[in-house]
Length: 316
Ligand code: VAH
Image (cartoon, rainbow, N blue to C red; front, side, top):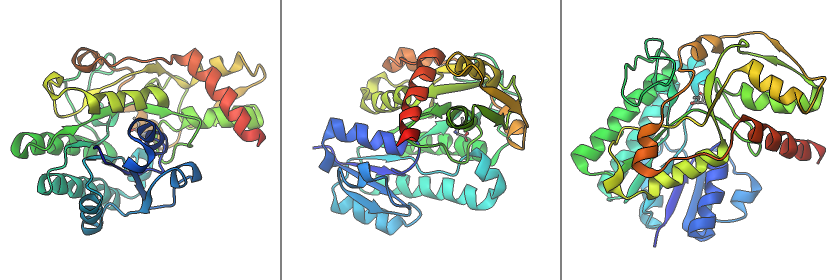
């Protein structure tokens, strides 16, 4: 019997992943945790506990008491916020990972998922069709923590046999939980502002192309890589996953097809330098070959759904 622990269930990924895992494994077999209260649909549909992932003893207690077999560790300080508080963000992103890896080694957890990011790439990385293996010189706190994290999860796999799995997420777009503290947040904010005010001041310039993915595709890819037969996995650092690639002017034009008077203006802030250091689009052929990565949502399909669902949400 699988018993799954989700760390960071109230976040952009965790809030949707928890519900999807509960559909697969049963509500009572997916324990949701976060340092802050969870949305009602999570806390009322299955076990929820307040957990600070830096509290290693409480984390181990929950894993042992609940006989946890798999952990999805999703808690992290994202790129924008990490630049505002480098040392505390480094500590949270790294110490939380070490807590999970050490407990996995200690009590022989079956499998660990930890999210990496396209932020592991830097300004010297080829920006177009960025390969799985390439130069990686990130110059952000978040990117450095993700690069270090990839090395550590691979180390724990090779040295201690901890079955670690990971994806290099692009910017993730969903209508259920607003993004928080990231550089790709504009691709979520733009929908809310377009519906509320028919205008949006974008904190990135018009041509800042970045790899993106609709959340349901990201959730499917996450569960697929965790459920893949270990013999199929050719790497234990983290898989490139791409989804779609667009810049602010392109997504604005797609929204204008639905809201003709929508206007976007541009006022780049500190996050422009972060975006400029990241790839524009990613090659994800290794993930496709190893475990069948695929996508459903392109820009048009995603825009239609985001406007429809956020429109309903804002009417409530
Ligand atoms: C961020 N949403 O903007 C995250 C993500 C690729 C970007 O890792 O920091």
